[in-house]
Length: 489
Image 1 (cartoon, rainbow, N blue to C red):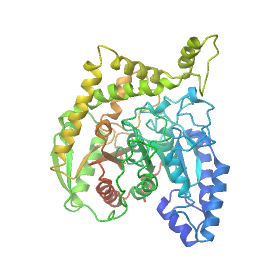
Image 2: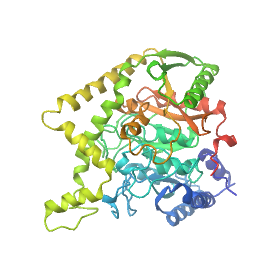
Image 3: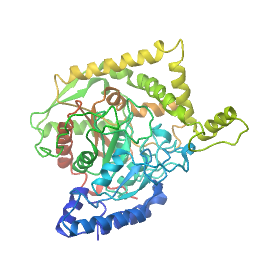
Image 4: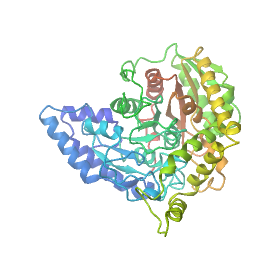
């Protein structure tokens, strides 16, 4: 009997030793996913029969000694922002309901080339615009720790499924915190790689200078393994970094003795929920106990991160979403002329949050307002980059909370967009700068018994240091091996 709480790395060893087959592993995750689906609503398009067929093929390859990778046969699932050949891809929007792509995203293709069976496509905030999962055009996922609470967003379905034991790992995307924030709220690991490390080809675009494919897993090691499979230069993506990719697992066990970790002065105030602050402060002490040197640093421009982000991201979204006009693919509203058809298609097909951001972005880019809004936001982005560069002259990593709160109740913030946007106050500066970041669980809040995440932020292309520190913390904390790390679902 396969335990679906087993990390992917251990499942790979079990297959190599003959203790488990890919078909057994995949079937176990399918059954677990089906058992929890009523509570978490993670799936938009399950591909269970395909996954079993692909698992059987993986077993045949292992029998012949031709495994495609160490994790050949371990299943995964994808946020529905990745296009998948022959499988509906909606980006959580009614405007793409029924669209079936003729090709695979690079991330999907590379995971397939490594032999990972695809369990299906998962729910998300529409076009990745949201911090709760409630903006999905198809109902919205729920948090496995409490079905009355949100799983975070925009990668809501992947976070909920992995946290509930329905998949060993999954791919999401992180534009302003959309993997790290739900990872924190659901008690799992979420990684935002350096911008350009993973190809964006085949990712349905929200904000092209910010979007980054990002993995979820239950352990830091698993997240590093999944990232390793998909990253590397892709000629189909002009923003793809051409440098050679290091081995993220090399030195992951080296510990953090002598590592310098900066704590952000501007994030030490009253912005975080008391229980979140308690657990994160304990995490700082644990890092210090493990040999790290903790020192306070100042990043004054971070105060303006949310303001800059909500000008830059909507501006890019307004351009990217102009293509959804009902002419070439997706939903088309009935009308007698093309102007009326386009207008009605966009009115009916887009949800409220998407419309809000399109209007914000269009206004910010409009004549007479460009310099006052969008141009100024770009200057703030440059300040954030410079502040980080200055900080890394003193420290190796930066630590802070991932989210200012634990998972909030469904409907609690839908009428207050600003309160919703502030959910990402600790994560958006990382996307604006293009740096790498990871969220690891650091316990349950004493306020409400819900998961809290610790965020570690690395220099661009220094994922190895980030994984090393996160792995050391995770191993010492013992979250994965304890019952506390599993939701009561």
